[in-house]
Length: 220
Ligand SMILES: [Ca+2]
Ligand SMILES: [Ca+2]
Ligand SMILES: [Ca+2]
Image (cartoon, rainbow, N blue to C red; front, side, top):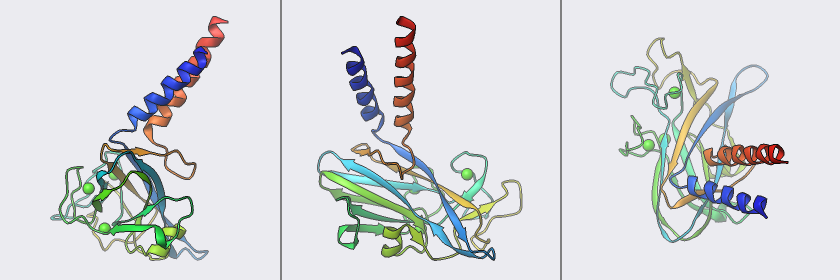
C-alpha cells in the first residue's frame, strides 16, 4: 500500500512539473549516399489541454544575430545549431491525417518573450478546447503531408556553425542538426510517448521511484 501511495505521489509530482513545460529537441539533416542533403527530420510532441482556453506555443531556435549575423547561443548549449522552424498543430485522435489539422505557423513576426532573437522562430496562440493535441515541428519549408509523415523533403535547414568561427548567415550550408526549444503555456501538460523528446518531469519521476526502491531494500 505504501508503494502504491508513493507511486501515486510520484505521478502527481510529474503532473505538477508538467505545468508551463518546455521541450528541447533537435532536427537532423538527412543525406543520401553521395552526401547530398535530401531533407530533414520532423518531431512530434503530444500534449493535452485540461480546460478550454488560450494556448501559447513558443519556439526558440534561430542563433544568428539579425543585425550583425554574429553567432548567438540562445539556448546556452555551447554550440550554434539552429533552423528556421515551422509548426503544424493537429488534434490527436490516435490516427494522424489531414482531417486533424488545426493551424500552422512559419514565422512569429515579433514574439520574443522566450529569448528568440529573430522572427523566423515559430509561434502559435489560439483558443483550444480541452483534449489531446499533436504538435509537429520541423524546418522551413514544411508541408502538411511532410509534417504528418515526419519526413521533410526540402533541403537547406538546419544550420550548424562554429560558435567562435566566422559569421553565420542564413545563406550558410545546411549540415548536421539544429536545436529548438518549445515552451507551452501553463494550461498544457505533456503526454508520454516513446517517439517524443522526453519531458523533464519524467526524469524526476524515474529518479524518485529508483530512490524509493533503494530505500525499500535498505529497510528490508
Ligand atoms: Ca520564440
Ligand atoms: Ca545553441
Ligand atoms: Ca520559421
